[in-house]
Length: 260
Length: 271
Ligand SMILES: Nc1ncnc2c1ncn2[C@@H]1O[C@H](COP(=O)(O)OP(=O)(O)O)[C@@H](O)[C@H]1O
Ligand SMILES: [Mg+2]
View (cartoon, each protein chain N blue to C red):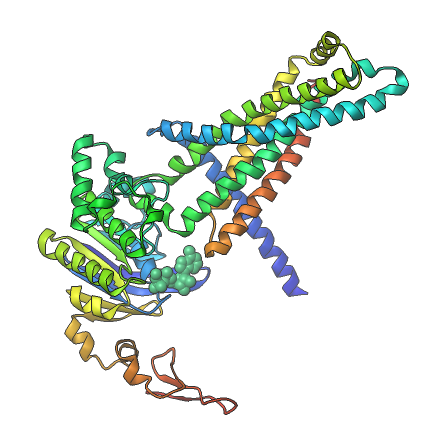
């Protein structure tokens, strides 16, 4: 009995220590953005990898989400004779919730786990120590560059996802539900207000931060050789997905509370 | 040049280094011997300031490094280079970029001088034709030699080696020990070499220190080491004599543990 209590206590202490380390890493990485050297080339390289590399999956995510939402939405609106207004439903739900969340989840799977495995490999092969020995700050060089790249590219990818999802919705609305093109787009944009800019950009910024920092943290805290690399990769993916869903809920709650 | 005094270090509550002291004069090659897991790599990481000891003092070139921040360490690290156990070449960079990494990063030299330094260092290790290869294309021995070239390129006063000959074929083992000797003779670099390769150790060492389970059990010359009658040292140097009988294993305190074949009970006989 005592043993179990001690174990639980140790586990909790372990979590608390990890959270503290994580917060410290985030602060250091963010602070790195304001100190020389800048590593501009490196940052652009990561933007390219994160952004261009993820376009294909976010396009697929967007188009199918938009199409399926339109199909389901039309069924729900049918009894009220409101099928023509389906675009309003699609655009509101995509821009506020589904676009940012689904894009972030796909990016967590592709980019977050990639970052984790890359840094984990560098950690277990002593390359991170070698960087420090060579006089480079690995947090700046490896993490700050990726953080800036994610903070720029995740919102961009989210906007692309939103746009493609509305296009997907349009395909179904136009060809299967015979809704007029002009009518579709008018109502699609009528549903959006200035607050959607906040939803549409603040959320992806937060998600980009989560995906990148969770991946980096998992990567650089890896131990235990190649087994550790696999563990870190999985861990990064699971943790960032959960954090995305949880933080999305709280952000939505907060925005509604503020009356946005 | 490098002085360790009474260093203690714990990992997860386990004492990994206990009261290690050593003194490496400038221009000398110090060998640290010891079995796997005895704390050799940890010692090197302390010198680089990658780890911090629990207590004790480390003085490099007259400056105390225990308690320095990462940024204060920068000027100390600028005088040192380390050859890591697995070479630790940056896999996303070519051999050229690896070797010139620090020079490019510092930006104190122009491009042409850096290229020249890179070529010179690679020539020193006999790999001038690998400039544009990626680390993944090199064999283990070549990686180690590129790692040595990377260490040399910035002309450091101190070079640390972590098991430079481990896992290499006899030719590369010879080449690497020869490089260490040449750096000693020609460039008068202060070197610390961690190894359990005795042949290499005898060849390059000015002084040796032997670590056993985190404790320094010997500090002196090659001759004194070979003449030592400490059972732990004898077992390490001449296991074929001490553990000659079948079923003999080293005891953790230096004796011989005899495990009789099959079901009989194990008995312990101090050597
Ligand atoms: N980061 C670490 N965390 C916990 N234990 C470690 C760590 N690094 C090394 N150790 C332990 O310290 C001991 C000495 O390690 P090391 O210096 O790498 O040995 P070696 O002499 O083989 O180079 C080993 O038992 C190892 O398990
Ligand atoms: Mg080691």
